[in-house]
Amino acid sequence: LNDWWTLMWSVIHRDGSACAYCEDHDGVTLTADHVIPLSRGGSNDPLNLVCCCLPCNSSKRDQLLSEWPGRQTTRRVRDYSHIVGLEA
Image (cartoon, rainbow, N blue to C red; front, side):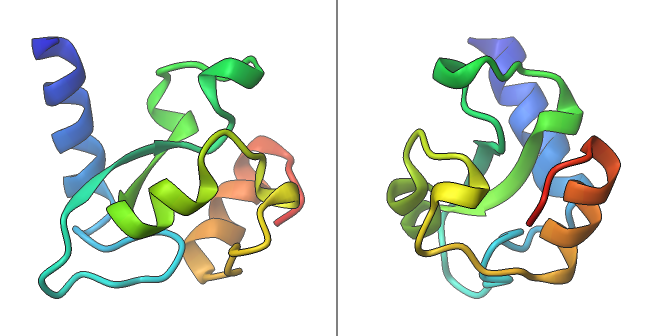
């Protein structure tokens, strides 16, 4: 559990404390989201994690970016998708 908290805060800090999907950062609770969900073969590798607000995380659930109707193509998501070879 301590390892997850350390990793989550590291990702939030790395991503500038703003949601990678909606870019919100004012007054929202932030967490880390698995871009490729664990249930879909993703991992806890930092490259598979982005800072995410709770509303976006709850909406995305276990969907891939290509499946998520709430997906927003912010610069952060496009940058991440390019790194791992996904379409955003």
